[in-house]
Length: 131
Image (cartoon, rainbow, N blue to C red):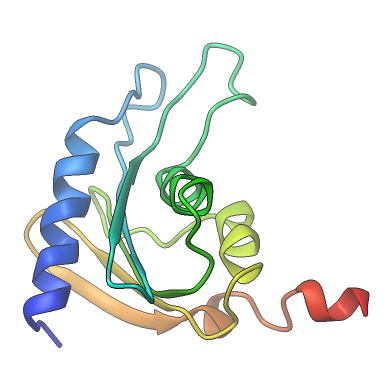
């Protein structure tokens, strides 16, 4: 499962995780999102004293990519302390752009598992549901 691109994503996600701002939960998350263009977008979670305004690493990466014009994604690799999967809100945001996105979860030292987004978000609500 570990190929050159996965390793590159893992390195970007680990670096992004080092920038996480988590004074309340201490649960640092880093993400690396691969666009169809080949560009990689890193993101980290950013907490806020009011809790709700915080943002997850996965959403930071996708919002960064979309703000730079990317709309088609291949893979997201997420690094946490324990290999946690993206939260429900992040799954829904990712679903906006791809039902079949590869989601790889890892720790700093181990690739844990690879999923397809549609495995993590069954029958997800997407743009086609509005047609």
